[in-house]
Length: 251
Length: 251
Image 1 (spheres, rainbow over the protein chains, first blue to last red):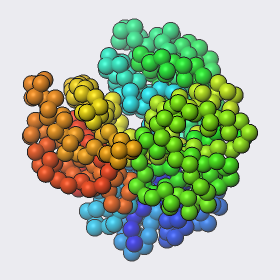
Image 2: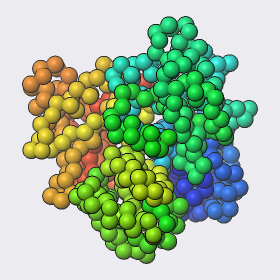
Image 3: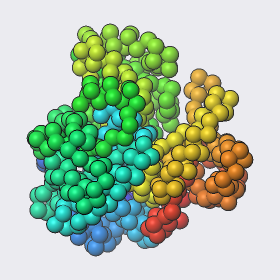
């Protein structure tokens, strides 16, 4: 018996690894963490491939009532599925810590993450600085994302900007909302860092067959319909000529 | 017909995704990029699971003779396997660009990468700055890794330091060699940034069942045998209390 924290990748049911699938097929309970990111296929597709019923978990369950999951893992094999790579969210590190406290065996099965899938834009992954995220303004009004972009840019690093999601309310921030928020912060800051003319890259559904990537000036991307979530935004630093070439070709 | 660039993850044959495996099983030719990183299982294990013969490619083949691969992809399905995530190395972006030039259909199947697998240390992935790498000193003597660590640290970002590999010569840089090189650069720089007392984290074989992670001062890690490659090194910035707790527990 053990707790298996299994990344299931970015797009659909077939993005799980062969190793992950073998564990899920044998597991006594299968949970899916359903609030830090979203899968791009219906849950029923997962259940069909796995031959297992999936128990959806929300923030409240994972953060406050993790004991239910951990108690089961003491005597049974529990698979805890996470969209992307399991170690990208604090929540899952916390779950691992709690499991270790209870002497529960934990095993992590890695998978693709949005943090590396952005490499498909042609931007060098090594040149990305700190990642930041933009919360819905009704929840938090923060200048942090602007400050992180500024700090990264000063040091010639690209910035990946993740956009807020609220699964319960079925709300997912879009590229144009994110750009408007950044332009709004600019109005206060008056540093001329993020303007209508600033080059950026909007991405939607990275890792899936219908991913959509578009590079352009802020004012142009505001007019683009990126379609279904999840979206993210990249603020590039100075680009190497090969990055520029790839960006032109891929985006 | 298409060129499928497929990440096969970090450890063994079962780290390929279900999607990746389906493509490989149907492909007419299967190449494995065998110089930017190393798999932690014998190639024969891959061939057995895939039911396919694998053609190993070295730097010369991928960088200079890519045309052979691309020509085949014009009329056949070609799977080009990459350890980790496909978009982590410039080589593969270059291959994609050349394929697009020739109007060859390219599809990328993402997978786990060392860039996110380091999250298993408990350090927040969002807090990592630019990634750097240490080349074998007989090839390049550069102060770049030291400078990147310094820049990241000034901005309170962790640094992932990748260590050089030379598959042809069967040489893989170890944690202690990397630390000695950094201490050597310190001797020239005299900035007191990397000393015997500096805290760091050595990692070996991340993503595999026998991964080994050890946090400690430079002088202590110099004495630790991290075993088989690949190794990497993490230079943490200031840590959040939860990161400290996780580090104590996991490393």
